[in-house]
Length: 343
Ligand code: ADP
Ligand code: MG
Image 1 (cartoon, rainbow, N blue to C red):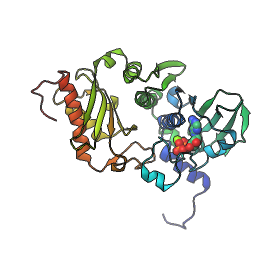
Image 2: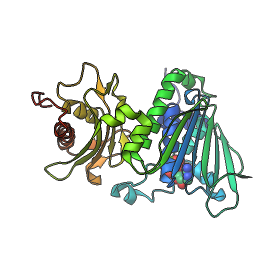
Image 3: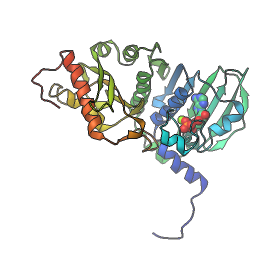
Image 4: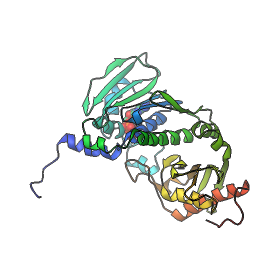
């Protein structure tokens, strides 16, 4: 079918663009938690209902947003974190920088942003209801920011139908919040589902206490430290990996970060698994919380709006260093049979 070329109406454009960032409850939670961490929060409390489908609330005690800035916070491509291309080229230190998350969520849900800065006596709130923005009104609230999301995809039944069961959506939310709790042991991160606490990390700065809170004692006690640099000196890897017998059926407990940014990269996970040689039972995967550091210019994190993929200049060096780092940690703790084939 061909016809006249016409511009799409504003609402359609908004919803198409929003779909790039907001795919499901977990993607909303990721953006909101990143904002809380970027705001320097020492506590981040996430609560979701029905897997996040019926409601999401993220509360932080960070720097807050002044009332007059609330409309900018939900505006398109508006950010306080990036000044222009020079900043982008230098490597971005904050988790967010595109300035499109709050705007995108507001296009496909009812979003309430309530915030108070440390020097203000009272807070303010703004509601964006499927693209319709309210005025800024005064609101009583503690210092920091609370963002509440309701009726996700309420006006786009096709999108809503694409969501999985509440249990599956919650697993993804849990994966996101866990990844940020593990990466930020100095922040107290908690997760609640339908009014029940799922975990709460203490925020004491100790990576092992975060692992204990998120994965429980058995897993935490089975984990050994990894700390290793590449021969070239360009890549270093540190973190924790589990005993070869402390495994799960899926790869989702292999949590990897590049320059402190959480990434779900199949090759990185593969490199960790390789390091165990033949020592994992069939279709079983270990736990890992692994941080890969590479010079900022040697990695591109701006590949996708959801920012979960990365590209390395020297892929072989990175993967080889990860494999060697995990392998030498396991060997050092006597957890690899010497006959295990080299990965
Ligand atoms: P980005 O994070 O890419 O800048 P967002 O749409 O996620 O874009 O947020 C827009 C702006 O709103 C941020 O740059 C920040 O100034 C402000 N903001 C959002 N969430 C918070 C928060 N929890 N605490 C303080 N400021 C926030
Ligand atoms: Mg953001």
